[in-house]
Amino acid sequence: MTAEGMSDCLFCRVVARKSPADIEYEDDAVLAFKDIYPKAPVHLLIVPKRHIASIMAMEPGDAEVIGRCLLAARKLGEAKGFAERGYRVSVNCGPEGGQHVYHVHFHFLAGRRSGA
Image 1: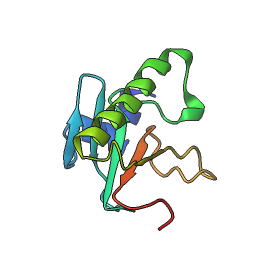
Image 2 (image 1 turned 135 degrees about the vertical axis):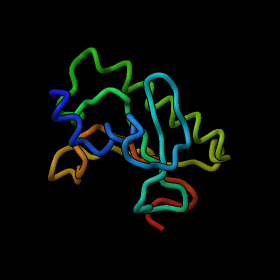
Image 3 (image 1 turned 90 degrees about the vertical axis):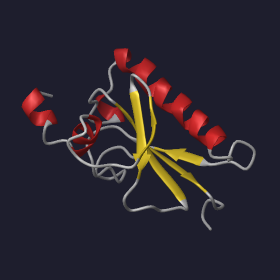
């Protein structure tokens, strides 16, 4: 994606601090922030800082940053007290998979039993 195209990406704007977000975690490659339409008592979005449109658009070189997103989920689970109780991490891919923002992101959901 071109730099101009990424300026249209909501999550790239959040990473660049050009759109507001309630940030919960950050390292050199990953950012996590509260979802503005939460589906659980704790609902965070975990994104790579580098733009990757979707899991379907991943290349082999993207594996490390995707793994870092999952490690961030583990750290958030521990920090928020859900390491023993559990939490859910999910990713939507493409229109039929429910993806609305085309910057790969993981939903971290906690605070109630899945399906409850």
